[in-house]
Length: 199
Image (tube, rainbow, N blue to C red; front, side):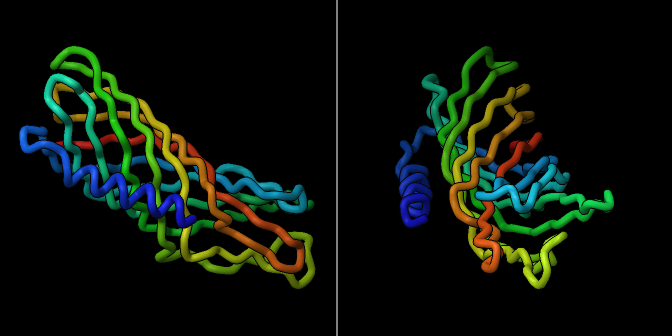
């Protein structure tokens, strides 16, 4: 966890240290999350659940080279869905403030460009239920932790320098959920489809 926080801090410092001729843009980003939780045991099986993300972003790019950094502060909804033996589905959703910082490479023509992005993120739980009863388990609960972190991998296209559409995979590296009696730990994982408008 300390390594990931350190990576985010280094990325933010690199953002501030970029040359003065770098192109700086602000924007709004939003999208759909398709997330689940990867557990260390088959005691609880998780299916995907749909949520959303939205928030401000900043991007800076070096002219000609096409390499830069983007960062965002996103209200993001993640979680999982479980199904009981009787077929009853239960959705468990947790709300986070996520702060991703990505190294981004753009390539292509001025009107339409592709991009690849990768970098760390940190997240802080700000809402949603903190405890859920585990189906089929007597007296045990799944607890959502207050901090999570991981890595982002993404790709997309940019149109006329102001609209970006992309997809992203978030690989959780911290234990974001736990159940003490079952010795169960889970990490957030998921895809997101996003759009951003840059000014």
